[in-house]
Image 1 (tube, rainbow, N blue to C red):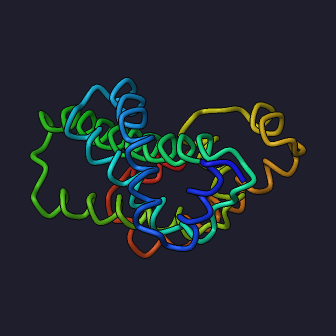
Image 2: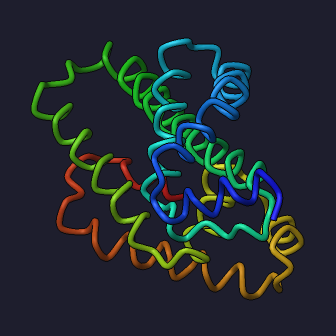
Length: 189
């Protein structure tokens, strides 16, 4: 068993020294990757900490036979992706507010309604089964076509279409009692 494998094995058993060794080995690389994507030092520091927090929290499930470097970067990519999604949603909301602010003043209550719905939508998306959630996010957040998703995930286009339809149905069903703001479902289309 090589040095890296030994450290990873010890990490999976909860050894804090092994975690520290992993942290110092990957910390700068993860930070630089996140920084080169988001261009925000504070955010890069926070997300880098979250990467290592996730590694520690899921240490018992780490597959030591697979590339740990790929595992670390997958966590980092997912966190960057989620952060980018949040920033995009906030940007869309700002555009929405600016567009309609001249016509009508947006009340504090409407802003709170939006924030509530934004959180609710994120929570509902997290409740989707993992493969359905991945397909939905590839479609709605990354803008991939059904064909591109099918190719990327090695599944049929019909499966992609079915999973997206089920996701939208699930979200609409759970959002129906809460949708008071006109146009909020445009995020799902």
